[in-house]
Length: 311
Image (cartoon, rainbow, N blue to C red; front, top):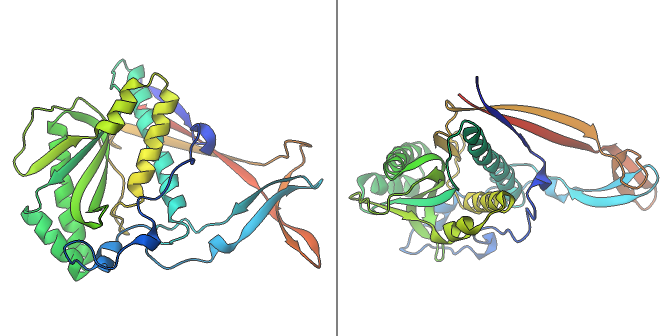
């Protein structure tokens, strides 16, 4: 019989989620030319938040019940990774889903009496002289998205093989094509998941490094709530400067966390939000100086129940 675990997708399930989280590098502070003289526009083309600005973020609504109780102000967004105003929301939504899958993977396999341990953060980097790295950089500077995608996919396939060799069993991979502070070209892959990293392993042309700051925090924690909270913040940070391209999955799962080994079923339930003071339905409202308050639509609350099953 298959084993399963249910995980709620409410945004407030991680204690303190959203507090103290900032993009990797503010968009206004981006230099004009990267270190080494590369054209920064070529590198920024595949970074979140460097497209055209939408108009959704300028729309604000006040959540207000029929009896005049005001709850809070909400802002609309377009949920696009290219928008400079809304890309953080895009990153946050995917970070929450990714952390859900990591947690669901741990609980599902634990119920099968297979202990994965605590999550780790590993960075896999190819040599700058690697032929695929040189080819990938050339494709980026030429502005060829098809060739750059093909080169990066080949490099990621090799990075996944290296991660499996060093002991990672279930993990998600996020590709980066730049390094920060200072901004410069540098291909590397962030791997977050479960496994026993072999520190003595050596692979010519590749560097495999355990992120010790993350691991030193995780190994001291006894509360899994704090562990998952740290994981979702880590994934959000990595997504703010990840390599993103239409038609390519930014988050890819491998090993025991892959789609053919960990099945996911999602059920979304919606209900009208109620005022905590009087219990009346909550509406999205705007205020006009002549007409006063007017209602747009009822505010709905969506709850997603995700069931993970070991195949």
